[in-house]
Amino acid sequence: EWLVDSIDGIVDEWGIGKAFIGIVLLPIVGNACEHAGAIRMAIVEKVDITIGIAIGSSTQVALFVVPFSVIIGWALGQPMDLAFGSMHTTVMLFAVLIAFSITTDGSTNWFEGWMLMVAYAVIATLFWFVPEEHHAHAVA
Image 1 (cartoon, rainbow, N blue to C red):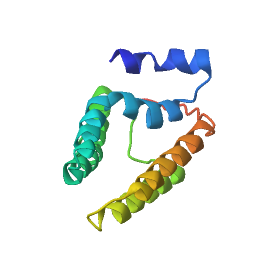
Image 2 (image 1 turned 30 degrees about the vertical axis):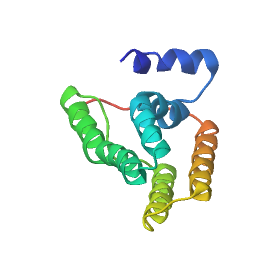
Image 3 (image 1 turned 135 degrees about the vertical axis):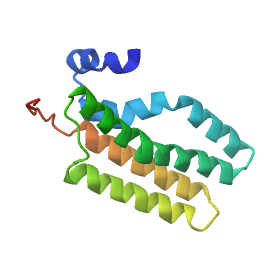
């Protein structure tokens, strides 16, 4: 809660965009325990559990957290919807395709890990340079 409340201060003080913070930094910090567990399982070569942790976490967010947030926002009169826009939808599509192509063969190697890290760096760079959108939502 403290982390989310401090976003506006960081945006104003450091000049970092909200899109970058919300899409790149918050998932890293917010899921640090899951990342540690996935790394521990990868070290002992339990790739199936590692992939299960990573894919399960993102599936949980996509299927539960986002729709739940929209419903709660609707109940509180906070304007939220599932209209992500073309850039966010394209990034999500490519992320799903990359994850699918890496997990379908059932094995992994260093190059596939490198591809995932490069994809994350490209997405992070993209959202670093995304201009801030300022929408005025009218609450009915």
